[in-house]
Image: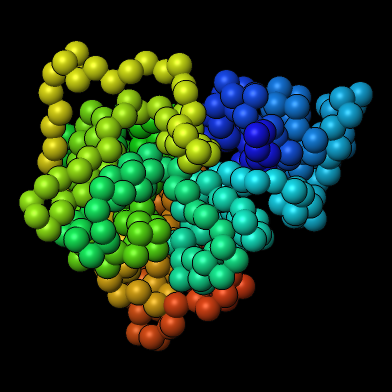
Length: 386
């Protein structure tokens, strides 16, 4: 049976890898709609390659360029928030949610429809509004399949036992470009240096989150909601080879691990599977050729963003939402050259401290989450030097 798919964030790195998976399985997957951000030309190209029926650009000003680029193809298109929601509303068995940042929260939440599967690559849906998002997913009978390599590996490893028998679920980190750098050298790092991820090809913001290890902190919060595991049962290990993506330590002493080459097509194919796994003609993992896998504890003194995220997860309430909002503003300022590398953690810590005394409850709805997000962003912007 052919299954229909809508791709949110089709022009990003996850979206492009998804296109490769779809094209390798045209007899099983067809694309209903694709959504992009600002690049009309790139979105039109992907829509044509995949034979999509509808294409939506989030940037309303690019509507004319998208229409012109799709002229004569028969592919319907639109631009702006209404067009994005139209894409989400169209009939599809699975929605792959890969819009980066908090901008992906509203359309991913709108994609929750009875009987659907959400292949989730937008971690902010759970970091900002995890309790509300997952409650709505359960109420509507929506299956959530994690796409991030770490959570996808955990999802597979956790199938080996019961949740109550999990002592620790561990996600791995490459350590980023500054793993071996001194704190003094890291303090002088430019945004270009921070964006140079040693393994994965991702967007600049995610690359910088990987350099600060905030990305791992956000992934712990995401794992908490995905797998119903408390902060005490979640951890991070640095693993530079990026072969082991997730591990589960069981109460009987056994350890189950998810391994794969660092290629996003592997977890994407797993998230899009139906009765059986999709066959992918990718290189196979050759452990003998690799020869050695290494692990180390993250250095939270050099990478304090991880500590901040762990504290937000443990505190709960609205603090994860606030943490994420402050981080997005701080990273934006760092990329613009307005603050230094360690100013990111200073800003995020300051905003979290400011809001933590207010005992703010976890957002009950996505609208609540977005309102808290905006309040935290306004506060964070006031800390950026003029």
